[in-house]
Structures are given as structure tokens and as C-alpha cells.
Figure 1 (cartoon, rainbow, N blue to C red):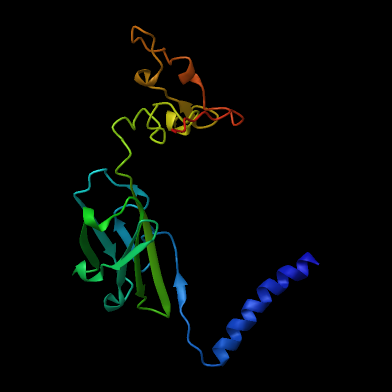
Figure 2 (cartoon, rainbow, N blue to C red):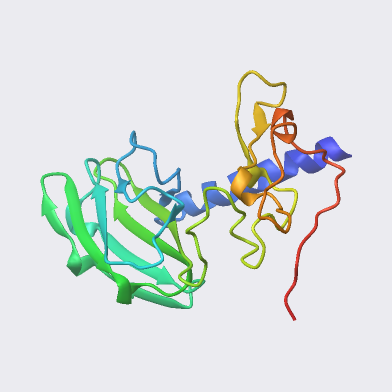
Amino acid sequence: MKAWTRSWRVIVPVMIVSLLSLSGCQFYVLSLTNAGDSDGPMWFSAPENRTQLDATISTVPVTIEIPGVDPGSVQVRIETGSQTRSASITDRFTAAGDTLSATLIASDFLPGVTYLVAEADAVLGSEHVVRRIALSWEPSIDVINAGRCETLGQARCLLPFPSNAYTVEDPATDTGLRVDFDVASMPSNKDSVHIDPTEWNRSDGFSPGAEILVEVPG
């Protein structure tokens, strides 16, 4: 019975597409490959997907490579604040060969996740290409000690605990990771002497069954 179910899941969409083609309907084939792929007709070359923006934004350069799409069909928009604000920024890009460039400023962003979306028609075939990258801007999060503290717990350096934020890559271990506590992040006594993390830093990670400690204000 399961085999028949899987077969019909394939057969029905194929039949629908065939009927639409015979009826003379036109439709686009969407290309939604990874934003960083550089072997397609269009991609974002800057900034990188999933970039964490500085707390104080000055400018954010954006470049899009368009070797395989119709330049006149390119549309770019910015979606900010969990996609609650969407605006076209197409007219802010300038072209130089197969590269489009623009510069975003602080007022273009809201705290949270921002998406940059580019769409265009491919030169060859009927493909409609869509590329999207995500940027994160969290101006209220203090990242000064991000190199040694878990930024999710602003009140206490090592909370939440445990966290892979306290590990580094180490190909010599079975897990490929190694604990890397900074001595400045360790608890200290009344004389401000911190616990020596040497023994903990020999471990290849944290137990998957460990309870997570977190401080919730309020």
C-alpha cells in the first residue's frame, strides 16, 4: 500500500504538469539553489549568507553577480524585522559588467533577521532565478566578549551551559571538537583568582545528556 501511495505522489504532479503544457499554459521553473553558489546564472558575492552585522552599522556593501540572467529583469528587495517590512532596492544598484553593486546603511535595517532577495529571468530557457541571503543585526547584544562568552546569556558569561560556543575544532579528537574555556571566563574566588580550565580543556566536547543551565531574568 505504501508503494502505491508513493507512486501516486509522483504520477499525479507529472499528470498535472503535462495537462498544463498541453493546454498552452506557460509557467516558470524556479531556481532556489544556495545563495553562495557561484556556478549558476546569478548569486550574491557579498555579503556572505548568514552574516552577523556589527552592532553599530555604518555601511553594508552588497554585490550580485548576474552572468546568466537578463539584466533588465533583475529585481532586488530587502525584508527586515522578520519580514514585516519589505521594500524594493533595485534602483539603488549600479552595473559594471556582470556585477551589480549597492550600499545599504543603518536605516535599512531593523533588529533581527534581514533577508536580501534577488530575482531575475535566466538568459537561456524559462528559468526564473531566485536568490536569498540572511543577515542578522542584534544591536542590543553585547559582543565585546563573544570570543570567550556565550552571547545568548548576557548576564553571565558561561550561561547557557553547556554550549558549543566553548569549543574549537580539533581534528585530533574523536568528535572533531575540543573544549576551550578561557581562564578569564572561569569563576573566581574572593581574591579574583580564576579556576584553571586546563583539565576541562582536554575534553572533546560535552555529554549529550547534560542538563542545560540558563538564567532567565525576571
